[in-house]
Structures are given as C-alpha cells and as structure tokens.
Image (cartoon, rainbow, N blue to C red; front, side, top):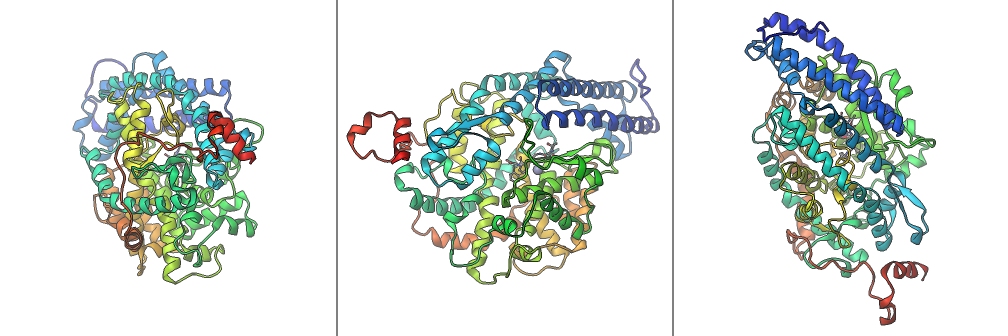
Length: 625
Ligand SMILES: CC(=O)N[C@@H](CC(=O)O)C(=O)NC[C@H](CC1(C(=O)N[C@@H](Cc2ccc(O)cc2)C(=O)O)CCCC1)C(=O)O
Ligand SMILES: [Zn+2]
C-alpha cells in the first residue's frame, strides 16, 4: 500500500476512493492471516499457537494504526466528502479501538490475557468422585450433567466445581485485563471500554432503550419464573428455596441458568398431550453430526439462501478432537477472502446442539450475504443483527409443522394443550434468557466504568443475578470467587448485550417474514421453510452488512426503524394468559436483593449425631445410603 507520509493534506474525494480500494485489497490479506492464526489457537490450544496468534494480533493492530494515521494526514478532510459510503468507511477506519495505545507491550498484554483467560476456561475440569464421576470438562461432561441430573446435591457439586475450576482461577488476571483495556481505549477517546462497545450501536439512547425493552418484557418473565419456581419446589422440596422468592441457580438444567429447556420434563403443562423430543427422534432416525449440518443447510437453501461453500465441509471443526485441547465454545468464522467460512463446534447429537448448529450456520449465511461488501462493511448492521440472524431460523425450525416436514415428528398436534406445551418449551429458552442477556453487560459496563471494583466483582454480580433473574446462589459466595468468569463471554471478552438485542429483533423479523409469505395464523406456529420470498426479504437486509446504520437495515425488513417487543409479546400471548391462570395462587416476583440466609444444601440430618460430620463427608455418606 503506497501509504504516503508527511504533513496533513486535504486529499480529494476521488483520491480517497482510490485509497479505500487499495486498503480493501490489502486488508483482506492481513485479516485472513490474522483469522487463520486465531483459528489455529482455538482449534489447538498450545503455547506456540498462542504466541503466533498474539504476534498476528499485534501485526493487525499495527496495520490498522498505520491506515488510521494515513487517513488523518492525507485525507484530513474526509468528513466533508459527499458520498455517504465513502465517509462511513473512513469513519470506521479511523476508529481503531485498543490499537490506538502507543505501548506495544500493553497492547500485547490485552491479547495474551484474553487468550490465557480463554485457555483457563476451555481447559477447566471439575472432579466429582463423590458422585462416581471422574474429572469432567464443561463440554460435554458438565453440560450433560447439568442438563440431565435431578439430584440436588450432584447438581450443586457440578455447579460449584465448575466455578472453582474456571472463574475462581481468573480474578487477578481479569482485573489486569480490565485495567489495560481501559488504558488503551482512552487513546481512542473513550472514557472506558464499555463506552467503546456501546458506540457500535450508533444510538445515543441505547442504554435507555434496552432498559425500556427489558421493563416491557419483565411481566412475562415474572409469570414464567413463578410457574417454574412452583414446579421446582414440588420436585426438590420447599426447604431448599429461600423465603424471598428466589430459585436456587443450579436447578435449571443449565450451568448459568440462562436457558431452561433441559428441565422441560419437570415443568411440562400437559404430560398427556403431545410434545416434541427432538433428541430422541434424531437418534431414532440415525442422525450423525454431518447430517445435522446438512439438514440446517437445507433449511437455508429451501428459502433461496446460499449453500455452504465446498471448503466449509473440509476446513470446519465439527467434532471435538480426541488428541488436543480446543476451545469447544461454538463459533462461526469469516476468513475475509470471500470463500473460506468455517464453524468450530464440539457438536453432540442433542436438540440443543442441533439449535446451535442452525445458529452458527445462520452467522455463515450472513457472512455469505455481505461477501461483496468492502472488507470494513463485512459485519452485521450491528452485532445484535448478527445474533438475530443466527437465531431467527430457530423460530421456524422448532415448530411442530417443521418437525413433521423434516421427519422428526409423525403427526402435527392441533389441540390446545399441545400448543401450550410447545409455547412453554419455546419460553424456557426465549423468555428465560431475557434477564440473563440483559444483566451480563450491566455488570461489565459497571466494571469498565469503575463503579464495580475488584473488591465488589462477585457481590455486584450476584446482586444483578438476584435482582433480574430472581435466582440465588445455592451455597455461600465470597470475593474469593469470581462467578462471572464461569461464563465464556467474560474471559472470552465477547460483549453480551447483542444477545438481548437479538432476542427482540428475531421476533420482529420472524413476524415480518411470516407477513411477507402471507402466513395467517398464530405467530408461534409460523414456519418460513421452503418459501423463497422469506429468503429474498432477509437477503435485502443481510447484504447491506454494516454499510448503513442499523435503523436503515431494520426498515428494509420490518418497515420500522425501531426495536419493539410487540411481536414477541404477540408470539407468547396465549402462554401469558395461561400462566396468569396457573399462577393465581402464587406470589409473583421476588425481592431484588439476594437472600441473607441461603438454605442448607443438605437435607435435614436424620440424627443430631451426624450434625458434627463436615458437609462433604455428609454428602458422600448420603450418596452411599
Ligand atoms: C469468530 C466469532 O467469534 N464469531 C461469532 C459470531 C460472529 O460474531 O460473527 C461467534 O461465533 N460467537 C460464538 C457464539 C456461540 C454461542 C453463544 O455464545 N451464545 C450465547 C447466547 C446464546 C445462547 C443461546 C442461543 O440460542 C443464542 C445465543 C451463550 O451461549 O451464552 C454458543 C451457543 C450459541 C451461540 C455465537 O455464535 O454467538
Ligand atoms: Zn451467535
């Protein structure tokens, strides 16, 4: 790239366009090299691959810094250009985030700390000898245990064991990580990292907007919470539930209480009516891992979107390798060369994994749709859009109609009870997630701006979990613990509000697509499968990438420029009415602060004699009984 040096010049707009073309050619190559180095570390965690990735990250940072410096010297007047796309490209190119820091060692530490924190998370194991289990990693061992165990103490041991093996080991590193990121981002003119992350939404009222959206959905969550709390009390016994309305955090079939789908069997409204057990059907139909991906691909091609490129099938990592440590947390990768796109997933033959396959492939479909955009615009309209696209297929895919269409259900149930079974199953994912998706970055934004300090990390985390989710820790927590670190996105440094935004967007878009295909009927039974007009409308939005403000992209697909909860409220309305009826005798809600007295995790001891046994041997002795 013939990057001239020297004094500030006011390059003409035509010269600016020329510069952008040269940048695009070079950026594709530099990014491709950088993504490959990351891919090699994430699919083979070794010191050597960590060093290579770190070096590549520094190289990429130096490149983006050089580009920004050139723009400010040679095209100092870019903001006066007339072409909106040219201006937008320059605006994005001069905002280089952490790379603006003038200390290479500190920039390097951002990369190494993130890699080390992700490495601790990805290699962490919890040993549960008292329950006849060896040492389990998160995927698949602990994930399967949290999903399938109905033993209060076993769940608790896995819940605590994972936090001891992950978050507890990260606290001091994470503190350093926050400090050096904040120091670096100041060089880009941001007060803290949270302000930088929020700037990507290009919406001054963003924090207020998401708060309002959550408040509008809270009544729906509160009804679901009250119903599930009653069912879990019946299952495990009231003695384990604090008297302030909270639910112990380890009973939801999920390590983070964020998706409650795995306890559907404990909360099913009408056991005698039809419900869809996709996992069993997949095994019955002889599914293998590749077939899961072929079925997902066929959904997208059935609505006229692109198939996976040839290289996808040879270069992806679709199963956990036996011979090396990898980052199992699923992800979709764009290699920015226009034809190399991959998924990395430790795929298992389960329903929730089948949904994740659709999710990751949804990201790849978005990558493919904006492949002709300039490199700098190859991103979602905002990061919530990328997640919304990843998830929207799940709203069609999980319907009984779709399950029958792909042979995973024999008959489509039309009775009201089966319909409520289905709606509750969807709510255990989509409604249960809302407070979790909202609170993660409430905590992180508070940490970045210094309102939450290392001395209050865990206390503030549980304050938010107790307040928004109405859950509480099943055993005492302290500042020696670092429970945020037990959730991938904290060590992985992946912002999270994007998922909350995506849960709003996916229902707005689903309604728009269902209207587009002329569907009439309840929104929750709409399946856009095999209707290319749905894919055509979706593509009109996807192909924009981040070349326009997200409000323009939103308008393309829904006709509105704003996020709205109304489609989601419409979708779940039949369930909300049913829950209100079911909860007539319940105290809806919970106290916003954590319980002062956490109920003992151990059943009342049969005799006083055993009261002097310490809990872990008591635990072991109970199992032996
Ligand atoms: C190179 C790179 O990193 N690429 C990005 C994509 C991009 O930005 O282009 C990427 O692949 N990110 C990984 C991340 C993985 C998953 C995740 O972390 N999900 C959240 C929240 C959630 C949970 C349930 C659900 O149904 C939807 C969301 C969680 O598990 O808490 C794991 C399970 C599903 C999605 C992802 O795909 O979003
Ligand atoms: Zn995603």
